[in-house]
Length: 498
Image 1: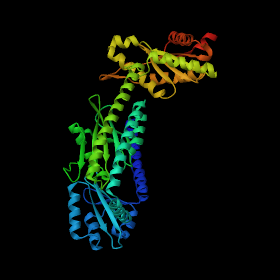
Image 2 (image 1 turned 60 degrees about the horizontal axis):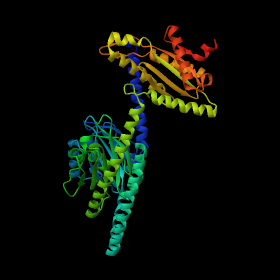
Image 3 (image 1 turned 120 degrees about the vertical axis):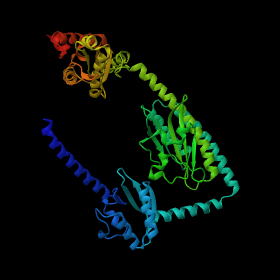
Image 4 (image 1 turned 45 degrees about the vertical axis):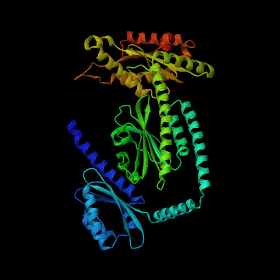
C-alpha cells in the first residue's frame, strides 16, 4: 500500500513546489524593491519585474541563468559602478557575509543594494530607491543642527531638569502598573506603553527564555522596533557576561550577533542589552537601540536609566511568574496537566450557580481507563502513567476552550461541559471514547495493549441542583457502562428513566 502511495506523494510534492514558486514570484512582483537571487555558482535563480524599473535596465540585461559577473559587467558598461567597485562586490560575495553598497544611476537616483547570504552558498540581493529618503534624512540632520544651535544654555539646563523629573514620575508609575499586572500579557502591554515615554526616541524589544531555555522568545516591542521571533542566548554579549552591555560603534565596537545578523539593525551606532534577572535567575533580555546622532551624554544617561527600568521589569516578571507557578501548582495535576479535583469541584459550583440563575444546563462526563490495573501489574507503573498521559492528551485536544477537563484521582477523569445538554454530552463522550480507542500508546521499544474507557453522563437539568447528586448520577452511569462490557457510554438520565 505504501508503494502505491509513493508516486502520488511525489507528484503532490512537485505540484506543491510549483505552487510555492508561483506564489513566491507573485509576492516578489508586488514589492517596491528590486530583488535578484544568485545560487552558489553565481547563476541567476530568480528575480522580480520591479528590478528593471528600480535599476533602469532593459529586459535583456537580466535573465534566469545569467552569470553574476555578466550582470555586474553590464552595470560597469552603463557607468553605474566602476570596475574597481565590481571587483570589490565580487570579493564580498565570496566572503559569504552580508554587505551593502550604493549605485548612482545616470538619472540621479541613488539605489541602496543589500546582499545577504542564503543557505546553500547563494545570495539574495535587494535594490531600493533611497533618493528621496537620503535627501530627507540630510535635510532633517541639517534642520536638527540648526535647532540645536538656536537653543541657549539656560533652556538646555531647564529641559534637562524637567526631563529628570518626568523620568522619575514615569518610573514610579511604571513600578505601580507592573506590580498590578496579573499575567505576562498584561505586563508586556504595560512595558510597551511605558518604554516609549521612559526612553523616548529609542526602539527596543523584550525577550523571555522559552520553557526549554534553548532560545529567547520575542515578547514585546516599542518605539517602532521589530521584535525577532527567537534569538539564541549565546548571540548576546550581555547574556554571556551576565551584566548590561552597551555597544558603541565608535568605541570597542563588538556588536551582538542577534543585532548584526539582522539587516535592519546592522548599522546601529549605540545600543544596550540588559539581562532580565529574577530571584538570581536570568529570565530574559531587554534590547534598546538609541537614535543616530545622539550625544555621548544622552546615551550614557539613557544607559543608566535603562538599567533601572530593567530592574523594575525584572522584579515584576518574577512576581508574575511566581504567581502563575503557584496557581498552576494548586490547580493542575502534575502528571497529566489536567485540572485537579479541588479546582474541578469549584468550577462545578460556579457553573451550577450560574445555571440555576440563568436557567441553563450543563453536563458531566465521568470515566476511567478500562482494566487499568492490568497495565500496572503486567507492564509496570511507568506504563500506567503513559496510559494516563495518553488519555489526558486526547482530553487536551478535544477540550481546549469552554470545557473543564480534570483528573479526578487515580485513573478517574471528569469533564465539565457548560451549556451542553445530556443528549449533546452523550455525543461528545462517544467521540472521546472513539479517540482514546484509536490511540496507540508506545512504551519502550513496543506498544501497550489497546486502551479503552467507559463513560457515564449526567446533567444539571436531570440531576441537579446538588453537585453530589450530579456526580453520583454520572458514577452510576459509569458503573452501568462497566457492566455492559466496557468501552461504551451510558447516560444516567436514560438509565433512571427506565
